[in-house]
Amino acid sequence: MSLPASPRARVARGFLRLFLLLCGLLAGALALRHAHGLDADFIDQAIAGQGMRGQALFLVLAAAAGAAGLPRQVISFAAGYAFGPWLGIALAFAAQMIGCAMDFAWARLLAREWTRAWLAGRLGGRLARLETFLARNPFTATLTVRLIPAGSNVGFTLLAGVSSVRPLPFLAGSALGYLPQTVIFALIGGGARVDGWVQIGLGAGLLAVATALGLYLFRRYRAEAALAGN
Image (cartoon, rainbow, N blue to C red; front, side, top):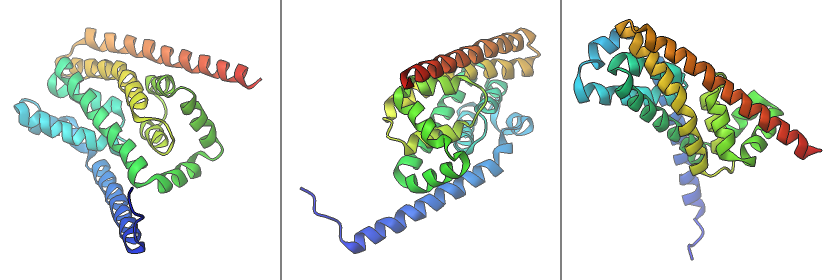
């Protein structure tokens, strides 16, 4: 049986959490400020054609920028542009999952109270409804949200972090939901580099299909929730 922490230890733990919270906010601000590092000029000079060094640099930049709020479509496009569609898909997917796990862990372990207050200020009464939506079926709810291109990717991850949802179904739903748009925008990015109109057209068509599937799942969920509430 573990002994209760002393008042001094609790104070020290509180200051440590506050310090790590501020470090997370600062890291996010710096990542967003330097997100231009994924533009075409920088990619051509420092990432594309640089072998494993370029791949590692892209993974670090993309994961940090994604965790800070850079749209995952931008990350996937940049990966396809830098590495071609297939390697680009793998690196973009890895970067998105790392960024997602970072945001989830940060919200749950370090900044739960602060994040909940921030979300409540932005969402108001919708916060409780979104938590209910996520809690009913974490995997399906997460998959539905990730399939739809609109909305805040980071905001939903932070919401999951402050909720009671288990990490595994949330991360599994995120992974499956990320995959279609990762493939789509990596194809479009690779096509932009080589003037591949077939790749671009295929990506646009797949985007329409993925969006329609996400909207279908969302409407089905709303209908089921309405029936359950009657």
